[in-house]
Image (tube, rainbow, N blue to C red; front, side, top):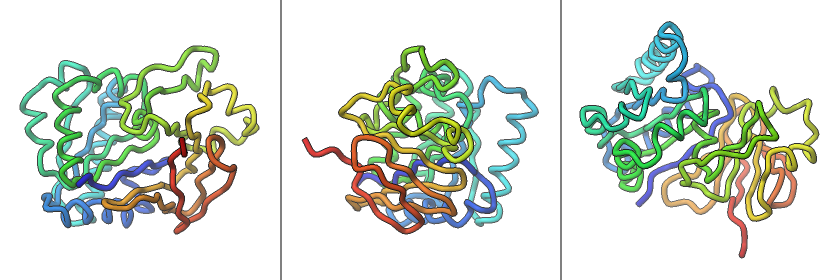
Length: 242
């Protein structure tokens, strides 16, 4: 019984996302997990200590507002991802949340580590797993280089191998025509490319076969399925028929 899975364009720990994040915790609790919010700030691991403290405090405030426990895991390097103390804290948390930053650093840090194995085990047994911005991008098999578009993609965590995510779509990619994005991002023909706007998410709840859009903006289907824009409450099956 895999738990809920969420891809978020931006807005982790902000008031506008509190209701949605609370629903992911509730999903995990329904599946027998503890009402605990697990912050995984790895994508920001190369940022300043002040910036990391900002993310920690923001997540703690969100947890306090939701009335749940919050655990901040300082996983900044691959060495940290092998630290058994941190690995042990993953089990039984209702929501595991990978926040934004550098998706390549996030994937390189977690691939083939005990921490990622523990996260997968917790998700498979009912916990919610959410990725915001970089955290959403890494769940694919490949991660494009937005800053160096001619550079080859790097390996992702491969949980959603067919889905490629462009976060912050309505902010950072409004200057790139959708047709150009399909080419520049090296998206294979057998993949689905979606753009997720800021303060918006697309979620597949435990037991569902479809994904649902949640938030104030849109999710854009750009490749792999008929082009379309989805609004809050609309559903889609993000799988390619072979």
